[in-house]
Length: 242
Image: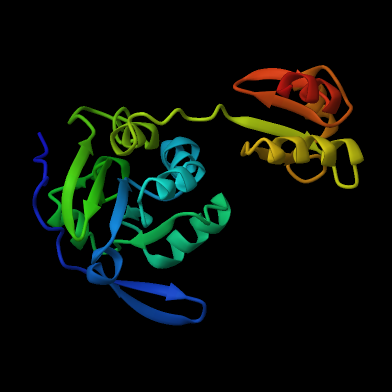
């Protein structure tokens, strides 16, 4: 079993990061001192669960965490800064600060460095999340020590339930659209006016008309989904929101 570090100070580490064309050393004091910070740590950039679930949901809920007093969200992985920068760009995760724990010092100091040599990974971080206030760990969610890559308690929704237990998460909304479509613009504005966050899937960039037809049975845009339910076009969305 992995030991919780609740009530303890985080390890003091300096992370070499690449910012633009320069090397910049970032210390844990800079990241944590006088701040409320969420950390989620994972086995590796570009790996399946990390890319499909762990990172995207924290990025999606970043504004909600900010509303409840969280100053920053850090993603830590035992990867070098070039890999972490490339992953951030690939994921378009602008709401997350990526921390390259390339030598595994932070993960080792947290007692979370594990050997994944069987996968060709070498030493990597175990998957966990924590809430840190002024450099002291308040709460940790550590995945069970079991085979594989468990992902049950270190997710963003579990952390949000701790940070803001009364908060009701908005259902996920996706809008299929295309540039220059006035009905798409109207649908998006209706969502904005209601204060609803949404993801936009742009035909020709993120998807094709074939994809849209396969998913919705229609080839016209916009097509809106809310909480996994197909709402329809602009007028159907307007009626739904009313």
